[in-house]
Amino acid sequence: MHIVKHLVASIAIVALSGATLAQPAPSSEVLFTQLKALAPAGNAEVQYHLGMFLNNGIGTARDTAAAFQQFSAAAAAGHPLAAYKVGCYLAGQFPGVVPVDQAEALKFKLRAAEAGYELAQQDVGIAYAKRGDAANARQWLERASRQGSLPATAYLARDLSADLSADKTKGYALLQLLKARMPAPPPEMTERIAKLDAQLSDGEKAVAATLRASWVTGETPLTQQARSGTRALPALIASLER
Image 1 (cartoon, one colour):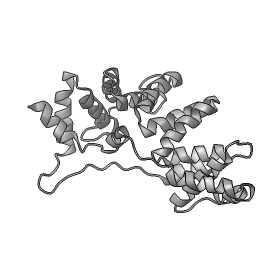
Image 2 (cartoon, rainbow, N blue to C red):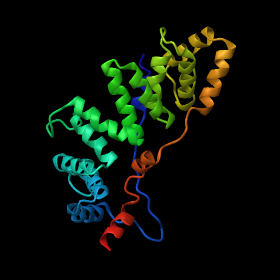
Image 3 (cartoon, rainbow, N blue to C red):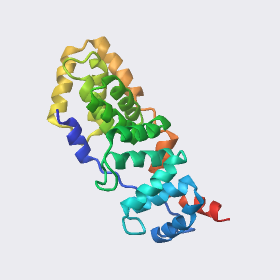
Image 4 (cartoon, rainbow, N blue to C red):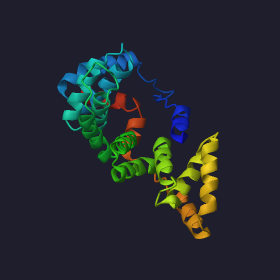
């Protein structure tokens, strides 16, 4: 089944910084300079954001080695989003910066997943699936899916709608949820839904409809924080420069 590949290929995540007409947001270069000056004081939030600027080449040239140093410092201070980024590096996101260590990568990503970060929950679920740990994989994929993650929903739907699945009702619900949110569902998805529609009873379909309607519970505060990008930086920097 290529539902997941089809979905992931169609998703592009773009982070935008907010600005007001009354007071234009500082430029990326200015923010980078301010973060770099504040980072030695050891504020984990500053270190995390400085790491993101270096990681993505925002307001400066990309420097993944320096980014990893900032993420590591922030993660050591307990910053969950920084821990996620450390996990990404250990998983091989930027080859050559640090040795790949999938076991350590999972440990760091788990910290962010347990704190509620959707993308970490998705990654952790996929990592467990690759290990053959179906129970943990489903647990974390469901948490990410309930926050609205389409890739996590796709992985979970593929698993639960399989021929040997013991929870086809949930798989049916998730496939229909995916179909409603995808502009061009692949034929394979439509065929799988039709097959399950013929297999399930009216009662099971009613359960699936209820499940589908209440499935997405919304993003956690940590996921919202990660999505906010640099919007909170001017206030953070101003509070630290006083």
